[in-house]
Image (cartoon, rainbow, N blue to C red):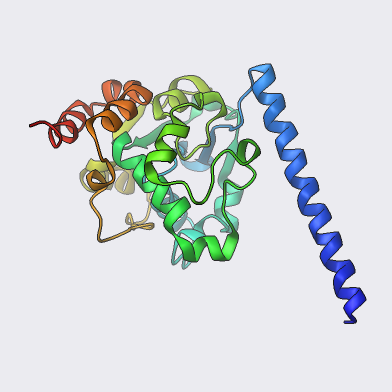
Length: 261
């Protein structure tokens, strides 16, 4: 390709990239102005088994999707990147309203909100291999409000200022997703921390595959990301409904006690 052709291609690519950013900015601005939501609830529904999973991001959702699909087809899904692009998962996924919801046993898994936002931060800000492959996921979110250079403390400050209706699914309060955004409140809400004891019942009843574990990031303790009792309390205030309604008070008190003299 000639130099002029390469320049033209770069210009066209850049133009459409900026156009997409503008469109997303206008969409988010419109949602903010009209009281709308940026996200929609997502379900993985298996109609012939009458079971549906309300997806809660950063609470083993990749592993649960993998398990559900493994009970239907013999797909070799090696990692979380594959699961999000798997054709069968796409066919089973419903966004927004769940048609004939009454026929389904709807379940979900929640997670300690203090560890969940650390996992979100690591996955979106510190997984440089992923960022190199697909780009910084929040580059266009709310007009670039979140920056790839944000430290965890800055990230916390920012997400604590974003209302749930404008929050990205990875740090939206789980209670808000389940009890406000979702048109169906799951009959069964389990804890990620107890998945090894609770999930086999799903495998036995619905023929799911064994639960794998994607997105495992070793070598860190989520508590180390918290630098002060003020930060702990800030996150508690932001996710108070998650802490109180899903039973994470002990985790809050333990984390807070690290800074008590």
